[in-house]
Length: 178
Image (cartoon, rainbow, N blue to C red; front, side, top):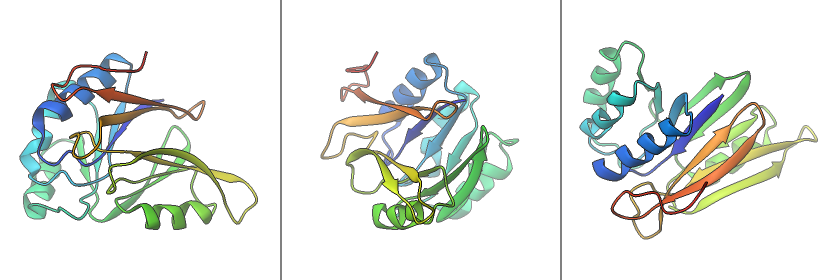
């Protein structure tokens, strides 16, 4: 299963739409948003791609009530979990949280195959040792809005556990990646 992992869209409709459009072209079957959507209406640009979107709120929570209502009315396309989430995709246990320090702690438990976070706008893919003697991948896609850092998202192949950082220019045009 191929998924698009992104974070920190901060109401940037154009770059969020460009990222999900590119991910869709690359075969994404779902989107994981690691927080800081801000205004729930920002997520409306993802509807056209008909991909399930899994989202948490982050520290710029915006209107949580409206986000819950949008999720209720989306027929399963929008899945809003609140502060964090534990989900399963393609047989992989995935934990989603906004804060990197919380993500690192969850990765070390060995309970998750992948832990996704955002917040610091720093792209990171790192395999961390866990207490069960194996490794858990920590994935931080940076900021899709390009705030203080390049506009990035990550494509993940969950079956192969392979990851690719994709960068957009600030106009929303694919800049790097294959």
